[in-house]
Length: 476
Picture (tube, helix red, strand yellow):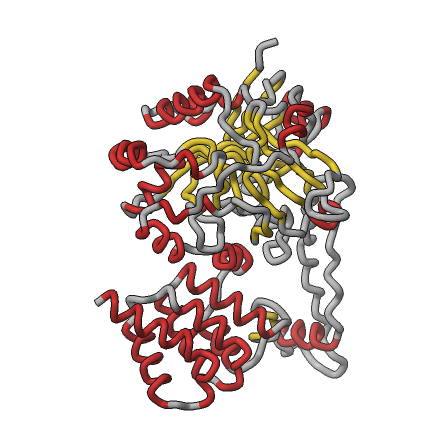
């Protein structure tokens, strides 16, 4: 039976989103649970991201698939190559999108290869790293914990966010200088450089565009991708009721009609304790979501909502037994990122990492007054918690937020932290963060003065200071 692919645009407030439903899909691209395979130790659940009959990535979910735990991810050792038909579909899709077709039309053939369900598609810039400074293509040769891959981020909470880091869908064995030369030219003309499928947390699998990612990073071209996310996670939105109207003021005994009504209201309110504000939790769920999108039930197209309610987020594809037979195979050779141009590896290390992106979503804004409170050792400003009751976490998050959003304030803040001996517990962390700002004369002067002073308060940052000074001089 041929796949039924339907698309519809919904509007929520001032935002619109593209929803695509897939029914009778081929289930040739997607994820599935493999159960307790023994990989990753007791209590670890294995998930497989697959393309066709090939397991692409093995995702180990520790603590019995706890949604707040980061995953251990690696390229499946048995991977050789996926079906030529799928390869052609991916190539044709990115050509159609760059030729001017809409995402719904350009990705239609790919959508028919997915598992049944409802998806949202959009475009977004991705950083071609693993979220920790390593270029993504050769960063998953062995299973290891990948920061930022938890489905439920404890700092962001229930907020929406856009994934921005990559997991490869092919090993680095496939990198060739000849293909890179071709992508060097094509990447200059493309608006959309790759196609990704969301995997977990901040990470998506790159389906198409591996060589293009190398070219884009080397030539400072934004790596913009067409993103596919499955909308299947139920969510509940709590809400606050509107404030009650202010009580009418009654004149105090002995006072005449000359009493100021406004003052009487203030006096009455001050005399009464502030009532507790109730938080309402609706019965049942509010809607379904993906990382970047929340869709209330009342906005869901009827047929799409039925597909979500009657279907399953993941299911075993026809080729499940073949996938399971391959995940324990050993790879004959492993290629590292060292075969890539050195400039690509250096630039990858300078890109935003998961802590910066995480902080940018966790914190809405930071005023200079709030930063001054943190520098004074206070986690509150005007009676409200600035970031977190934990002081160390507040300094770290503020540092990451500023590094991602405002480099000038970041430089000023890190210097102020390192100049304060009472904040010595955070000195090493912020000094390491400062290594990304090699163009800052202010940081260069600070580190130079700190080394020359011989002051014991700078003992923890001397290694980072000397590294910054030497790298700064190399760039001049």
